[in-house]
Length: 492
Image (cartoon, rainbow, N blue to C red; front, top):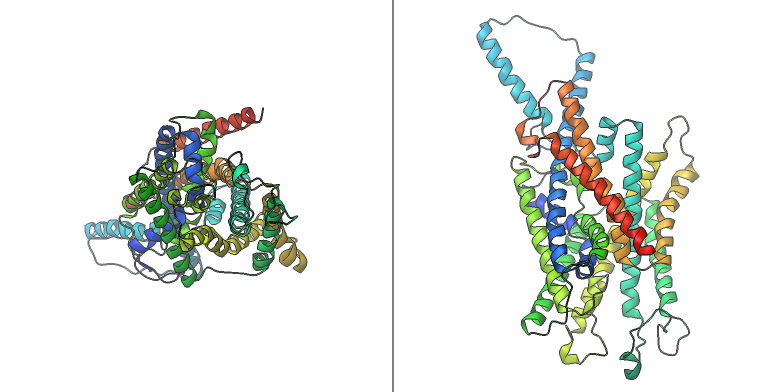
């Protein structure tokens, strides 16, 4: 029997601290770039409260997913054991031990067996768990949610990368007199003496982005260790630079930001951005399973979430008080404003300016093909029919195009990263982060009761009561209603 520290089908294992770094890097992604503006618009007080509340609910449902993973491991191992028993003839030999010793050995064996059966040693993806615990409607609901979320993810990437390139490439500037009355608009030229405006240049960059990265959707791609290290170093160098630059400005007393205390109309957008920014649930099986020692995994996850919470607060607070206006892609705030005195610019270093603006270009471009392939595979699973297998053309051409074209079409219509992040987080994100984990743990616990196999304490969420499941579900439903009503009112 494979123990928790042994190699399994998940491949090479790594220490707990390495796994938590991976989780931290997974959580702190694109959403962090949209958070400062959402923070500013909603007001610093209500934003802080909502950030703390959503961090708590996200951690709570992470523990639900890990408990469901433990039960899924139990079911996989039990099925394998039962299959082995059916194949092999079982012979019983008489034991000379006393009945009392036999009973003690049986109790000890049951406890040891339970610890092994529930240990998370085999990767069970969320789709696999949905198939284990849900009926057909539940499985379809899961795949629909994950597909909508991945479409939103790709649309966000499809906007952020071309928008960042566009803001560097377009060199046309307003003259000094016009600059005092308005900022650059999309109908302004992209370059001096050019008939191409900024909006059309943005759309051209989307097409170039699709041409460069789209073909990878037709193949299988994997994120290599080198690419993961490169993007992690790039990401953290950029975030540290942004925090340090804004802190220097605030220390010098040059902060220009005057955010409101509370602005209720902007809360729905902030809610979606925060939900999106704490998302890691769909990738937990791949990241948690290879961790060697999971004895304190819940406590270490709590530390991870506290660190993420502190980081988001630091990034957002320094940003909202340092800048008078914020872009929905935060890195664009570090391009010096031509109307400003160079002494008042956040940075006059060309290297820092291009490094920060190109940060989302490199990091998001490396992830785009992987997410596109993941979406393609989920679409195949949703529409798979065993009696009618896909033809080569449908499998290799139609599904990659279904994964690629809709998000790029959305990017061609809007460049609002804040809206896309807010919408994706508010709807698909709420389902994946709150509703699905609650349903998984509810039915997983029900299965264990039916099988009369209690979940070992080490694998149980701290939130053992059914009340917590219902609190999360009610919170998710109220949040969805609130966000929807506010969207309808704002459109009127």
